[in-house]
Image (tube, rainbow, N blue to C red; front, top):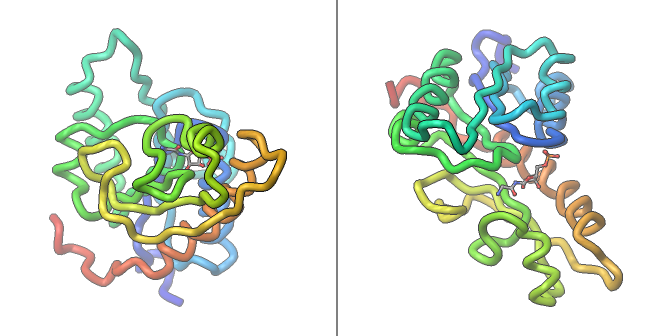
Length: 199
Ligand code: GAR
């Protein structure tokens, strides 16, 4: 395994409970992932920041409110993440669209994860949408971020059957179990070898 300083550098963005972040932290500590997590950003005081704090990871909160200048927020977000010089940015439950500055800076090295089998049920409420549609199989998707809403190139997917009696919470929890594993698998296979090609 490469030494810590040689490991690919990964930044994570969150908005919520951060169970995906927690999995990435654990995986980078127990040897499942040979990456170094370099920092965590959030668009609100997300409860998941506790995992960053406990792991001693640098972190920031950059709120986006109705009063925020969105272009400026995008530029500051880009700067704050870029300061860590990540090889990969993982949007792990970060419930914001990226703007042009962020997309230009991190094109091709930003992954997102979504709790449906895209292109079905993009956007907010993906689990609720799947239940309302009556599908018997849903799941999760890891994809590359582009300017659209969950439209980027799909990297990997995992299916999760909908069980009779499922509600949004029970189904989302089962999806997240698969999602955590899928994200770890994708990052493990990510072609980091091209470090330096982008800057
Ligand atoms: C995950 O299911 C992720 O796919 C979803 O938020 C959850 C985050 O869980 N993201 C989206 O819906 C983005 N469109 P976590 O906060 O426990 O890691």
